Image 1 (cartoon, rainbow, N blue to C red):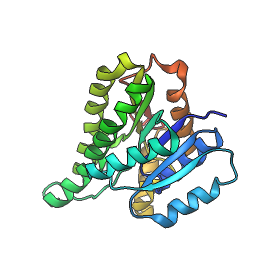
Image 2: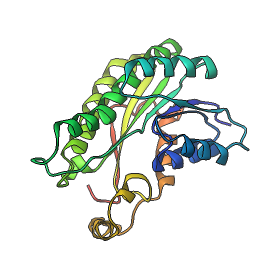
Image 3: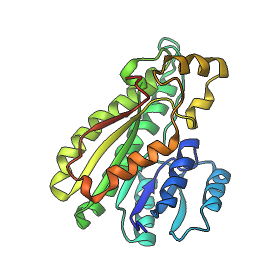
Length: 244
């Protein structure tokens, strides 16, 4: 058994479900954050309830600092420590830049960038106290290649790169690493908000000609979280089938 304690944000989403199942099977204890989808998070927990791990769901709005303070405090009380933080929560509101409202711009950046910052800010004191931690930011190939209609999403995910680099320099002396996984198109999550015809067009642009298997994301997370991977920090791992 692994026995590391993981705080995973966005655990009720499509990608969150795959990460939850994969890490549970590998023996990680899971603190699962969600905001609105209580039914999905309940189903995700039910699917892994027969495993010998500790798992608990927490309702919190990651864009609200008071919610994050309470979330981290509750997880510490229930699990004792947070060994790994996976910033997975994310949304996308698509429109051409000249049609994108300021409200939608702010909403996307608040969830995708401010949320990970707040989670990192309040988890770090626990990791520093324990002199161990692994922070992972889930980003996207979208800001790397440029996709029309994704101005807010692309900007928010690009911003994670700067956050990750900065955090990695600030905390490496405490045996804490920070890395980013930049995902291409995977058979889960936000991909299925896209019409089927466009999904087919996207698939043709990927050199391997198919969407990724979410199990590969879990394997990448497991590698980063390994205690022997402490030389890996401040890096972006591109997992995209050769797209970028």
